[in-house]
Amino acid sequence: MTSTATAPRRDLLQIRGLSAGEIVTLLDAATKWLDPASVSDRLAGRTVINLFLEPSTRTRVSFEIAAKRLGASVVNIAAASSSLVKGETLVDTARTLDAMHPDAIVIRHPSSGAPQIVARHTRAVVINGGDGAHEHPTQALLDALTMRIRKGRIDGLRVAIVGDVRHSRVARSNAHLLTTVGSDVVLCGPRSLLPEGIESIVGEAPGKLHATSSIDEALEGADVVMMLRVQHERQQESFFPSIGEYRTRYGLDAERLRRAKPDAIVMHPGPVNRGVEVSPDVADGPQSVILEQVANGVAVRMAVLDGLVGTRKTTD
Ligand code: ASP
Image (cartoon, rainbow, N blue to C red; front, side):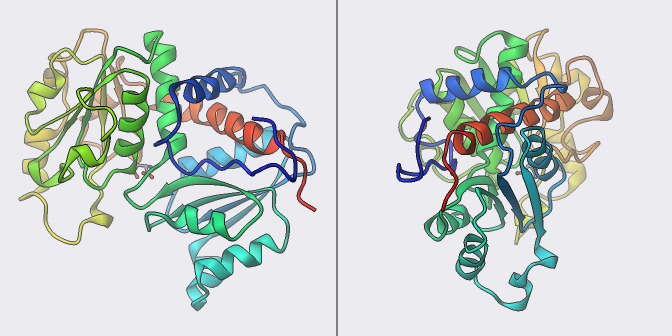
């Protein structure tokens, strides 16, 4: 990961395309930052811009804490307070920010591909904080770190990803990561919420990715059960009859969880629709690692910022 101002810049735009070795290297680096007391001056004098054009609690705060623990200055820009509401294009916003020489731009955007556009118009390192239904790379990395801590490995696991797969960038990034490192992934949801061709998600890993509309089948023997939020904001039409029916058919409760392995862990990227995709007793129960995911997110983002920005000379 070494580079200089003249060496090509390294961004983190997606998990797709990363090798198993690169993923493991990032997880190893994150492990060093797991202690919440670990701080450093590796990014002293550097500026990280959080350009969040869609709501976020966990990811935005996590990147801010990560950057500050590494000694960087952080500037937060939210949609409502940016010139995008005055009609400025994303390209002009990227160029404007670039003129102020930030070292990194973390971008969240409702449109898939927005981070790639920003990357073409800035010298700063660009990190995707979630773009439309495309990818959320640091979420998949923190999920993998949580699995590795809890299960001792990330290869050879059976991972059930259940819910609104169609609109989930978390499902996509996880599917790429987990199949790359050799785990089996079962995508599960109502037929209307499964992506049209699952091969389009992980064309390069046939055999490692399956889809089913039966939650019982998906949970059978699972080491990890990852529940997804129903993404109403990305649904222009009705994808299932009612929330009540969704809960009955796809909600995870204690009884359903018994189909998974006895030591299975329950994950959710948040925000959780309590009582819809997960019952409160499971969300707060002994198998839930939801808050550990949040904690591990800071370590992952420290590793990403350090690896991409800390090793790079400042832009002139
Ligand atoms: N926080 C995650 C995301 O931004 C999951 C979600 O919103 O449901 O994709």
